[in-house]
Image (cartoon, rainbow, N blue to C red; front, side, top):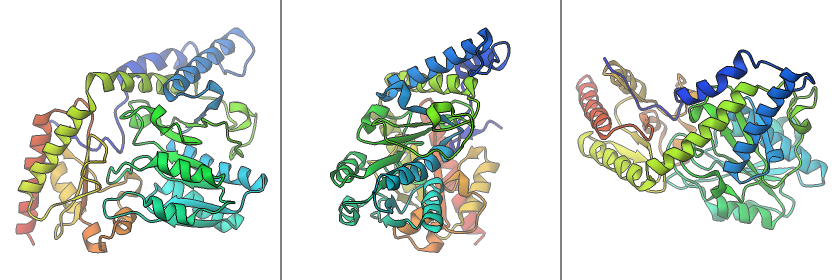
Length: 384
């Protein structure tokens, strides 16, 4: 049975071009970039080149690219590191996060609450999963340290008004961090120019798991979370993963080329056709997330009366890979906090199913997924 991978918001396969670019730095060119001999200098040059290539794509200076182990570390570094540095400069112990952030942001904010006495205001969202800008503006104070809102929600795909939030934050002197883990690759990172910190993760883009970056476009001061040898300009100590950094740069460049080959309008049309077919053939299915202002290869639904996990198992048996939402929350019985924040009741939230795919996924594959979803839903309803 050929599997159709419609869970690419969880992770993607490493691209062959990425592997080939990484290979020398995993084998013969294995030097530590802090070493002064020739092998180390070549590794340092490769790291510098990868940093510059990512900086070019993001519209920042190379010194504003901090390599990390992935999205979770970048979110922690941004939320905790920026807030602590801002407090040290005299800002209030007050941060804003949206109610539907990834756990990496929510738990970082909770840590600040518990151990640093920071007041955390959670910004509500509307029924489509879009942050309420007016509520954010009302919650901001002249001394607010940080606002953290993701560029695109990982569960329901809704795009967020980052530019408006950045303007509002900057008017009171606060910084704006955005988790762009799901956004990067689909849209130019330069579109997030108003943000002070941007999180990206390699394994959502065809790079390996375990590499990411925090971009600091405005050069904001940040308190490091990992201490040691002072790598990454004293912002993230530890011997740099040269091969992974090279792979991340190549993956971002491939994503940029892919945007030119697969126009956004065509991807959105394919997505909308898939959504329409699901809504027409799966009794009771409801789209979650904004119907139009959402990621181009992302569709999420609730199917009241059918548990999300049984539905996913049935789809897996039919060769369709999907998820119930965030991969980091998979296997838990609790309803999605994102869907609860959008106003859904707990029972309905437990029926969530998310489909996410790549630019090269075909219309035939999506048609097959819609058909299998419909047949699985009907069979499960028949079983009560």
